[in-house]
Length: 290
Image 1 (tube, rainbow, N blue to C red):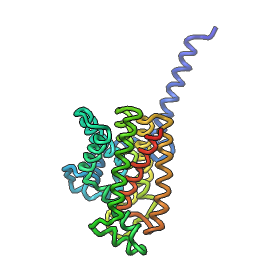
Image 2 (image 1 turned 90 degrees about the vertical axis):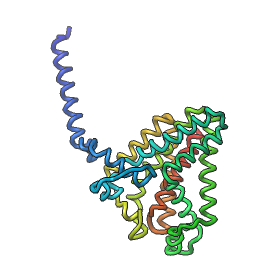
Image 3 (image 1 turned 135 degrees about the vertical axis):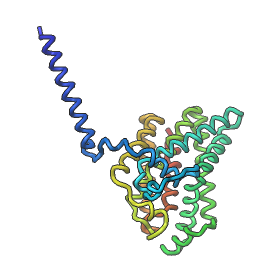
Image 4 (image 1 turned 120 degrees about the vertical axis):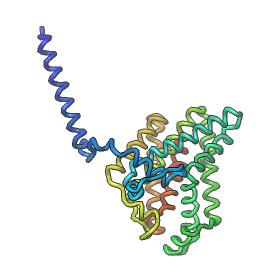
């Protein structure tokens, strides 16, 4: 018969070894360059990203205001959580007063556009005008900088808004209101989680402007943003639908990266806005199909 005290000692030693291994893992980032300092600075990162990506009345101090946006890239999907949460709340309120799913979805998208100042929609419209109307790289960049909107831009906005509203309403009709709310939040988070990777994959197409000033995020922050966005999708949509949605977003990301490089040789602030819109649409398509 085995000695109970001996078994207890072995379990105690095993637990101690596991604890030390986990602590060492956190200390060296499990080989990914992540340390316990990862928990520091989230408040300032959230404030910086909210300042750039929303119209919330955020005030930055001199230190935080002087930082490039890329240094706070890990917080991108968390801003998406806030934007998606607002949209979900408006959707629920719209349903409570008796609006149909499509009308509730339009109200929710309108609320998210108010929070962000339609920043990403504006980027999508400028990219559509530039890529569709410019004869060469210089023409495309000049059109994208023009504040006026053209036919391609109008069509892009109509399609983006219409597709997203219809897809959200479709999810609600097929899987219920809770599924639609989950899809909205997941799409808002994941579509912003891809932006740090886009900033790193494509060089700035101009020497000035938001795309150039934002800088290139560190690998650690790209990884963290991706993990947060990916986990949100898997938790909110479920494993099967979540993996399908992530694969869809990845395919659209690769395709648009190739197009942007071919069209203007890199990324701008408008291109980043288009990434967000395309990623959100593609994730909602996957959610509706699932």
